[in-house]
Image (cartoon, rainbow, N blue to C red; front, side, top):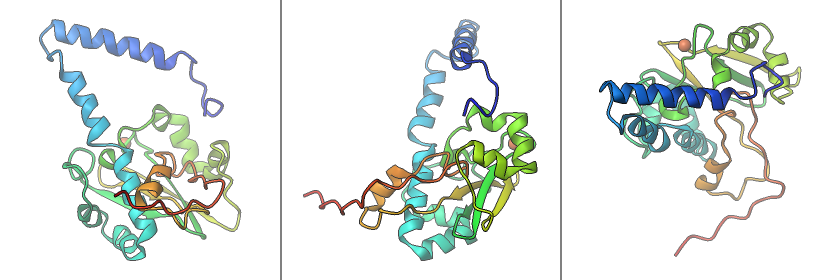
Length: 216
Ligand code: FE
């Protein structure tokens, strides 16, 4: 991914240092409490994140009727599942799923800024906010996808969806081969955030996976 956009290699470390300094200053000034940042982090580790999106995708893979309902009315279909509270909260008010199939590959971007469906995908990666990604994603999506390692055949249509405050898109990737015997939980474990943004495919297991015996 570093080959796509030219960021300094110490970007993560230098950002982390800035955040720590800012947090210390805000605590010192009494603007936030000593546990405020941890509370926010915990929310994105346990309540809002790609682990929710993965469960939605796995259900859509095993249940074609659910897949249809998800595409037709995404919030209602999400509400059917047992997910943490807040699926319609911040940045989740207007989520919509688009389904990859043999004919169409979907890619999500936000041309304006970084609109993203937080409850099902968590916070966007830094490159999602990059002006180059946002511009090239629209102008030459196939070339950008190739740089991410996704070579979409010419026979397949590429659709680019522009997230905004009105609609925040996410992708239901295609179910990979060798997963026929897998449980819904096993399937969910295969689904990556990148696949739900459309910049990656879900990798197939090397060999067919046997259905795991139910835990007694
Ligand atoms: Fe945005």
